[in-house]
Image 1 (spheres, one colour):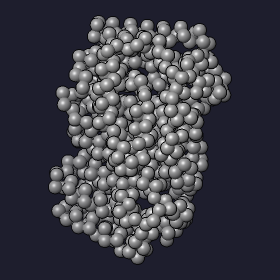
Image 2 (cartoon, rainbow over the protein chains, first blue to last red; image 1 turned 90 degrees about the horizontal axis):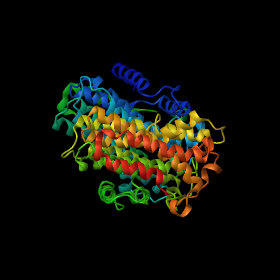
Image 3 (cartoon, rainbow over the protein chains, first blue to last red; image 1 turned 180 degrees about the horizontal axis):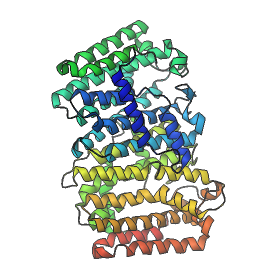
Length: 296
Length: 296
């Protein structure tokens, strides 16, 4: 499915804000900013910013107050891709139809571009003006929870477990750990952060956390499926890479049919958890649907 | 010179707090936490936390309110060492008398341990209880300024310029950029952050910023000198590495005698900028002296 005009609008808001928030290529030293921008503007779907902004909208918040946070989440996501692609980690040459960052700029610059992006994300989360926005206390809480989601007991921990699992026997519990940490926690943090900045009440936040957890897992299962059945041209990366690296994936543990069924099921549970919001949640519902039907 | 009992006390406060703030080795996945702790507890001088805490004390703040920030700065410093030592960057095998992180744990884990530490630092800066401490607004400002100091126009930018300068003709302006960014900005941010959490007034903060800039540069000049004239055993790393890598250093640009003179001069200017504080600044003065006379 194609995303609605609402998301095209959001996407263009995010692209504009990212361009303003990230140092220009000319900023000294130029090579690091060229490298950071190369990966940041390589055609990402901007799914995490969309989730953050739609969650802010859903609870009646001012979308622009969550825009800096939404960009910061995308910047964190981009750093994880650059570092994961490095020769010492996944050793991938192509990403979104282009050479990966280290293929283009060399390993040293790619490592430092990732570091620069991660650091910039926290500068943006804590240093952007709060016009019409959340309190300083809320921004602190959002930043701390995002860091926790991205760190060694979140995204980084999931990546470590993912590497360790290569070549191991299928193990459902370990796979769930990998998926929920490597991808799920940051997706949930995107939804929660947007909602908190938008002024979510406790019960709203609980419902949106449930939504985030379920779409996060659905997203990763679809990722695993696309690595086997996807269109290499559309996806812009080398497929069957999970199989080549003997990675533990949902299809390798549960089979392809069961994986497809599970992704749809999870998306359904995510949509159900939005019931209390009525039509305010329509865009988040669209995103849940998009996540399970996407082809790239 | 040996540091006073005051700094031994501070050091033990910092060691205790770091141990509490960083996930235990048993935390899943164990290898990443073992790796993060390996470098964090490898015998660092804890200079940056000392600066932060002494600056907080100097303006009459409650030292314990800046303890989490002081630890976060040390954690950022540790991540920069892990990533700088990587084969793709400085390719160093020894640090503080032990194998570097990637020599002990492999490159993938070392990259991810650095990422985990950097992320943890921001979690700690924004997520620690503020008992007796600064306002949420101040903590946001301190976090944003620290991120700016550590990022692509700060520490990371300095590292990029440092790599690019290898083998180039001596260039005083470029060298100043490298030193002030690679080391100076984070040292200044340590002093400023501690002072802001301690409730510094604007004129106090300006004076302490001056102090930070001058000791930051002095510290890096001494580092360059020790790489040539230091004791390999005391320093715990392979010396003459700057010369082997044809790095641009203060002695290579200005000569050894001029470098020594300049370090003492900078430390003197730093001490002068503390005049308004009277005896409250005695510990910061001790640190300025320590920085120029240290042998490791």
